[in-house]
Image (tube, rainbow, N blue to C red; front, side, top):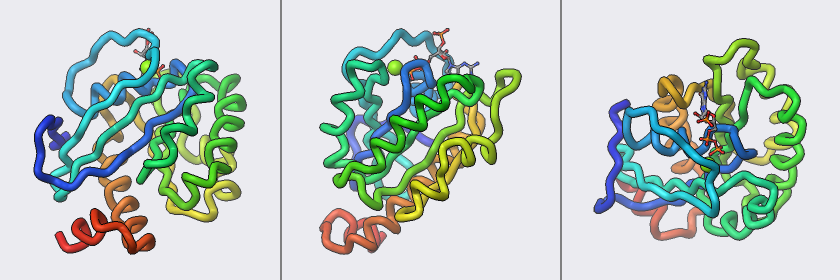
Length: 194
Ligand code: G3D
Ligand code: MG
């Protein structure tokens, strides 16, 4: 995908929070973002974290916070420092999409994440009957709930990696724009100068 994982980088660092219900595919995505292998996941207890060098002068620190019911209360603790949100849905699970929408709405109402850009990853596009990006956009009521920020719904497959490169590119663009609009943070001034 042309993206490299890095543990030690001089690039500027921004925080990307990855949320979504359990089983949506967050941990698989996190792993796929940093290397091109399929790996076996087990339900995330707590959180996973990794850093990705985007090649555009800054490093994304991706926080994969467990999506099980008991972890969802902890989501807002991670929101305070987020510069971008990746919200992952299982596009093939129409039944749980409604539950996912409710959680998504709650997150978006949080003051800390006001105007923070959002990429929805419409994951599991390889499965039969998976809803496409337009349908996920409609069901999550993106136009209504994300009218105050940059947003995009990216169809993807965590297993093959399809759509992930596009998602990160768009996220990077949005995060830069968000930094410019905030205009106060030193880190964003430095990013803008790149
Ligand atoms: P989570 O971290 O959001 O809870 P996981 O989700 O990454 O643990 O993934 C949950 C299950 O979905 C895993 O299956 C994983 O392999 C599968 N999965 C993730 N993304 C995709 C995808 O794009 N397509 C398909 N077909 N499956 C996917 P198992 O069986 O290992 O529990
Ligand atoms: Mg997980």
